[in-house]
Length: 149
Image (spheres, rainbow, N blue to C red):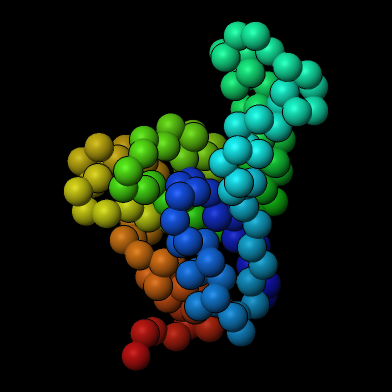
């Protein structure tokens, strides 16, 4: 069985790379949003033209990014959503909600001090973890029935 994993959420750390590296040898494929912050913010105006109003600048970018995000979530078997430490990721909450609404298997990753703020998001998840290694352990168990040693 091959699993398709969409890695969503926080883009300021290397958590995606940690999961991808640790999952080598597992029958999985990964996809993700554009993680270049500047490209993600400016894609709409770079492609469809400048905007004087920051709202419309952001709106164009958000809509283009939504094309990739929707496709990634819709085609994934498992969606992993990471909430980072430093920034409020409203898009991550949206992605988690979309994954849950589509009936996708959802893994949420955040530190313990975010548990209260994310309790509704956590309630929609099949697993809530704190680090990338736990995500890989879940994938290994789901694919091969192997527990961590």
